[in-house]
Image (cartoon, rainbow, N blue to C red; front, side, top):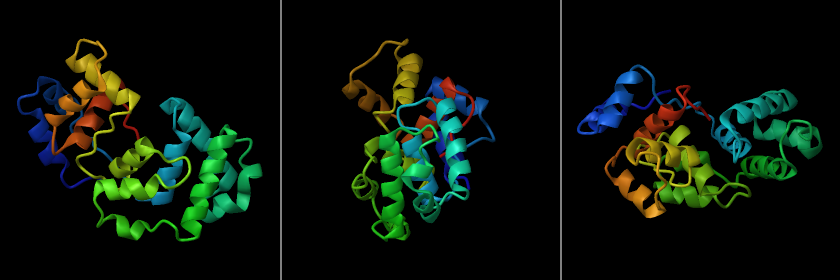
Length: 205
């Protein structure tokens, strides 16, 4: 599933921004894609915390083999002991199992999120162990496909902005936030294109 706003957003970003114009041209026909699975997206985000995309893909592959069809029930059935050989740290195993419990017990209600503001969804998600603001923002982008999320703490985004707009020089968080203002109300789309400037392969959660 791709966002219905993608073409409109891409055209808007390309106007008056040479970096974005070049990226939009380079990645025509490619876009953000949602897997449509709330639990799987959040579990993938936890697995991917603080490791490279390549490492996260390898760990996710072993995780998927261990649990079979990835779902709250399958994770709870395998349990922490069954996940021990997947390459997940003990802390991440705790987080994934706790996430599965939240879903299984109805403490998170994905059906309500479509009607909630971004910050309200973030507040719900960060109540789950192991889900911080970055993970919640990845969920907003990759599952709910919200158009205007700007994950300031994402290292890839930071690097891409610094390389493309500041000749590779690191900037304070305030400057990064100000740079993002030029891309409202399409900051999720701008972030996706900036990620592509570092890694041509689209990331999916």
